[in-house]
Length: 98
Image (cartoon, rainbow, N blue to C red; front, side, top):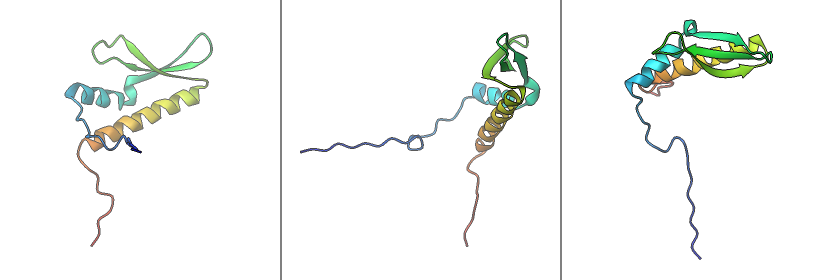
């Protein structure tokens, strides 16, 4: 009997370097001034960020039941993209042994 076993991990594949347009987007959405919250007719709140090419266009991201939830979603997105930008600088040393 032959047994075939293969595992997958998101970390096992080589990391692809983002192109400049992706880095520009991350820089853009990492600034809170490029975000807004709109209330929808159903009472939900939608988070949106300003499009890079067209300043009059907004890209919808999430919908939340409360204004606080929507703002927390924006803050979480900003933190996420700020971390991505930080890791573009290379590995972060968290501990060194002597």
